[in-house]
Each structure stands twice: as C-alpha cells, then as structure tokens.
Amino acid sequence: MTVHPSLQTYADAWTHSIESIAELVQPLVEGEWNRRTPCPGWSVRDVVSHVIGMECEMLGDPRPIHSLPRDLYHVRSEFTRYMEMQVDVRRHHTAPEMTSELEYTIIRRARQLRNETRAPDTMVRAPLGAEQTLELAMRMRAFDTWVHEQDLRVALGKPGNLDSPGAYITRDCLLEALPKVVAKEAGAPANSAVVLDVHGPVEFLRTVRVDADGRGTVDGAPSLGPIVTLGMDWETFLRLACGRVRAAAVRDRVKVDGDADLAEAILREFAVTP
Image (tube, rainbow, N blue to C red; front, side):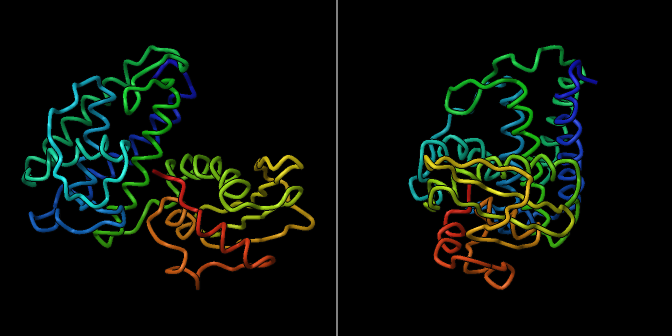
C-alpha cells in the first residue's frame, strides 16, 4: 500500500492493467508479437516495449543510447521520437526476452509502489526532460497502460476490461481535453454548449460549455439547448479520442443531432493523445 490514498487509486488501476497485459502476451508465439495494433505504427511487440520502457523510466533507469531509423513514418515530433526510442531498441527482441523483461519490470515497479513514501506533489521526471508531480505521473501511467491494454486486446482478438479501474481514469483524462477540442480546435461559437452522450460498459453524459470569451469547460449537468449532441458507445469514444480510428471509419456508430458542420469539425479534431 502507498501512503497516500490518491496514489493508491492509480496504483491499483495500473496493477490491474499491466497484469492483464502480462497475461495476454505470455502465451504468444513469435509471429503473434508482430501483429499490427490500432496504435499507429506499433505492433504487439512495440506496444509492450513502450510499456516496459515507460515503467523503467518511472524506476529511474537511464534511457537507452540508440539511433532511430530515418524511415519511421509515424515519428513526426520530438515527443514521438522520445517515445520511439524505448520501442525501437527492443524491435529485435524475442518472445521470451520480451515476456521476461516485462515480468521483471512489473516486479520492480510493484515493489517501488509498495514502498512509496513520497508526497503526491513531489516532482519527478517526465518525458523530454520535463518534470511533473508524482500524482500526475502515476495517473498518466494508469491511463497509458489501460489504453495500451486495449490496443493489445484489439490486435489479439481478446476483448475485455472495458470497465476496469483504468477505464474510469482514462475517461476522466480524455474528458479534460474536450473543452479545447470543442472551443479552440473545432471553433464552437461563444455561449454555446455541446453534449456528449456515451453508452456501453462506461456510461456518461457531459456538456462542454463555451463562454462569452470562447473558453471551454466541461461538466455533468445537462444542457437545455445544445448546439450539437454527439451520441456513441464507449469503445468508439475511446478509439476516436485516442486517435486509433478516424471519424469517417465509425460514422455509423456516431449519432449527431444539431449543427452538422460543427459536429464534423469536432469529430475531425477528436483525437487528443499525442
């Protein structure tokens, strides 16, 4: 158990997801590690490599010294280049090497979490040499690990855990980014409201409100006259918000009421993960 209850919530969600990942990949034969996942440019091996690499960074391990190939089409920014380093360095690792490193990393991180005594506001290392609070770092690891668990489940044809603890942390992380999508990226007019109605294993109704100055906020209160209402299932919301699918590919799974042009703009900008 960690000292602070807020950290324990994230630790429990992370544990559930990373143990699910270990269970998913343990029986895979060599060829299955090369299956394509919904995460752009990444195979099953790549997703697991990323998870291992990020947990090693949480442990304070040094980053690998490695030169990336120049032909990786999905590496388009300094952030994606940073993330790719831990992935590419493991691209030729065998199935036993991958599962062994994953298992060892989980053991090390679980021990670290059990012995965690730092306050939630302690500053720790973040990607690209930045810093973030320990609470934010653990929240993002719970979010990231659950999303990648879902990537692996899609690739391997083993759906599940759509309502596990990490799902609710992911929901909250994605919803926090919606005001920017609606107000800034999609250009919703001032003094308007956009309602998001999501059903399925995780259900919620949220309203993004744009004030007179064009700033967006999100809350759980219904709107009497939304300019747009978007209805979809939880898995479609997840795939759109995480950039795993384009809106055109799931058009039949999204119900639109109201301003069609604004709805199109919102769906076009819906992806909020890097």
